[in-house]
Amino acid sequence: MTALGDSDLTMVLIAYERLTDHGLALPLFATSPTANALHAAIPSAPGDPAAHISAFELYSTTEAQVLDASQFRSAVHGDIWIDVFIWRDKVHVGTRAELWESTGAYHGEMEYASPLSLLALAEGIDRSEAARCAAVAYEWLTRNWGISRADRWRVNSYLTRLARRDLVRRYSMVPKIVEVLGSMHLSQRQAILELRLPRIRDFRLDDLPELAFATKALGWQLEIVLEDLGQSATPIDDVAPARSLVMRLRHGRGRTQTQIPLRVVDHFFAGSRTLRDARTGRIRSMTLSRKAGEAPNTMKLQLPEIAEMADPVARFDRGDDGIMFVVHDASSTDGREIVKLLNEGMRDGSTRKTQRGATWWRVLPQTR
Image (cartoon, rainbow, N blue to C red; front, side, top):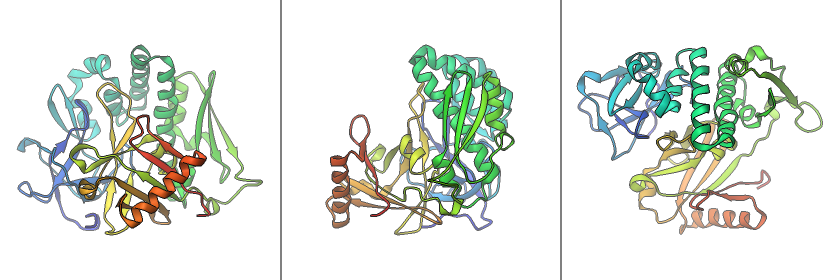
């Protein structure tokens, strides 16, 4: 079943699914307050708090919790994004600006107990407040997880997220912007934040206002380094990123859910959260998953078809119109081919595993 994105159908936010004990939850919509089928909204720009709703897709879950009727919200394609936020088991519904206002009495408590949740709200409000909350989150991570992990979060998560957001906002219409995001790299040396981008155009600091502001708030200097792709500058249409990925999936909640490591999302998916089922054409969206008090480390993906599979495996292929995927049981003919590719990668080191070895993945050579 395809996503509901081209019609003027009014949807109603009636439920949510918890992603953590507190913080942002997944809002769930229906065609009416009494409808049984639930839908998840698809953002116009994944990860952007200023995103709009671009479509709705059917969402299968056994963990949905119904909102109080007084909190139901209507929404149509093109509306500003609506979130659900939980604190002290109290449910708040609204845009980021509305959530910031309704949770104001708890901000001091959030700074002490869950500054990452507070930062998620602040990023949709004001650059100065977001920078302040990021500093609070960094101090919290340093106290609880050590300075090394806090430093990695600040550069690889927080600042990288701002860079991606700026690039998508400025260059969303540039052909194959996904490849640009996949090639970018941030690193820090003393008081300099270095952003490396492919030399496909003259990127300027003015193109990156969120990242530039956050860097200045840290007392750092932002430098953009443009790198040649090969021996000389290459037009963006000729950029050739990795195009295929195979993966051994792990059953999650209800056996209909799996998790995609963030390093895979950042590398192969280049931060994109929207995938298309190659068999049905249905759109699936990944959602951020984190345990209470921890930095995010995976993306959650609902795949009802894997519930009956003993050992699900998948193949992801990048096309001109996005990333397509297909899922098989490892014992099937197509599944055995994916297992073979993963085993081949074990011999040459191209197959990677999560820490406990439950999820395997391999980016395939482009000649295959």
